[in-house]
Image (cartoon, rainbow, N blue to C red):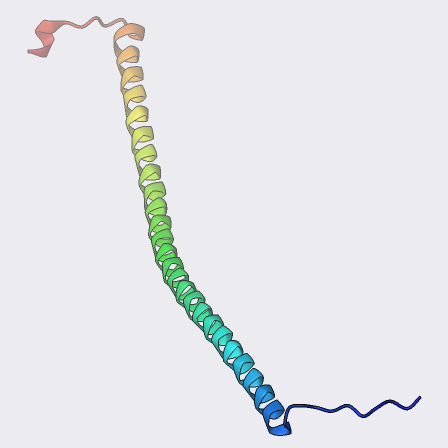
Length: 114
């Protein structure tokens, strides 16, 4: 039941050297992957900065459009009140003319105008 001793044909130095080489290779792979991840983060950061700049430009344009809309509202209100005034004057003039010539019975005499 006893088993014969296992003999190893490699020296301990060779085995440790192979282990060390594997660790170094894995370390290089990990470093390369980390470098790729860093590059991706840098690209993402640049894109984010570009988006923030674009957002600031859009906000400035939106504020300018908002100001323009407010100015248009004010000018349209002024135009409406001007039109109401003109319409009121026209209606009042028409009523005066109707009252003078139709209701009063004074037909227009051209000779009195000259």
